[in-house]
Every structure is written in C-alpha cells, then in structure tokens.
Length: 201
Ligand SMILES: N[C@@H](CCC(=O)N[C@@H](CS)C(=O)NCC(=O)O)C(=O)O
Image (cartoon, rainbow, N blue to C red):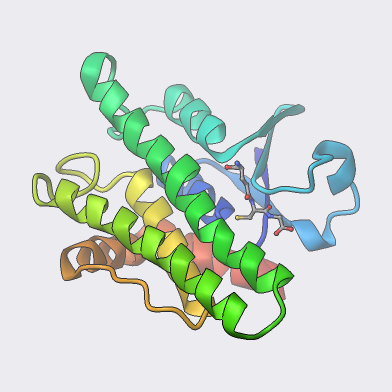
C-alpha cells in the first residue's frame, strides 16, 4: 500500500485523486499530524509518496512514476503525444502552481495595505493570463490533454480553488470552469476530497 503525505486541499489532492483513479490502496497522512515528516522531507513540503520504503518527492515526478507503473489511459506511450502530456503536466506543476504560490507568499509576508493589494493584483494578472492559455488549449480539445479527463485537469481544479483565499479577481473563462467542474465531480476526485476531510478531523 502507498503512503501519501498531504495537506487538505493542497497540491497533494490531485495525486490522491490519481491514486484513486488508478485503483491503488493508499494510506493518507496529514502532514500536520505526522511526527516523522521532517525525517522524510527536510524541505517540509508535500506531496510525499512512500512506495515500499522508497520516498518520492515533487508532484510531477510522483505523477509520472504512478502513470508509468500502473495501466492507464492518461499517459501516451511515447513520441510527441507523450511530450505534449508532459508539457501540460509541467505547465500545471511548474508554472501555474508557483504563480498561485506568489499569492500565498504575498499574503504571508506583506503587511495589509496598498502595497500588498498592488502585489496581489499583479500576481493575479499573471494567473489570469495563464488561465487564458488553458482556455486556448480547450478550444482545441475537450480536456487539457485531449478527449479524456486526466490528472492535469485535476491539478488545475485544485489550484483554481486557491484564488478564493485572496481578495483578488482572477479571470477564468466559462470553458475552463466547465473542465474544472468536471474534474471536481469525477468520482476519484470526490473520494479524495472526502477522505482528506475525514482523515484531517
Ligand atoms: N515543487 C513542489 C512544490 C510543492 C509545494 O509547494 N507544496 C506546498 C503545498 S501545495 C507545501 O508543501 N507548502 C509548504 C507549506 O505550506 O508549509 C512539488 O510539486 O511537489
């Protein structure tokens, strides 16, 4: 059985949903309740996956590891198709996620006032422009990586919820919102949300 260290609603949620989708047993461990966490991950970051004693960090690496290990229809076998999938996976993990990360950083470090408001708005403009690029992609395909819902759509669904914590106006088109809604309604995602809420009580 896998172990997944998580925080409710954090980026680990997409990995949890993926494990459910792949029908893998997983023990989820809330980082705030894990006494051994610092020993596993000195950076203090989730997600952390433990597979048979092997500790795997970094969301994109964990996702590729799981998709390569378990049969699925998300990861193309090779060639340009696989590269395109990885391109969007990395866009989510290494471009959109850190763009939202700026909101958390500003929220935590700047004192309330006009400078903070300005910084949050500037960060939001970048986030909105990234969602615009997702919209362009969705003009060509039903989901971000083609005709099927993949873990990338689930990642976007997780990140989109983070904007709600800040007094900012992030523009997400109806087309993108429809994909986010589909990802959030997907049974593997719903189960992950519910199991995390239950486990973190
Ligand atoms: N590049 C890392 C980033 C992970 C990351 O930023 N995780 C956040 C949660 S979404 C975290 O653990 N933050 C530390 C904290 O909030 O204390 C990855 O993709 O795994």
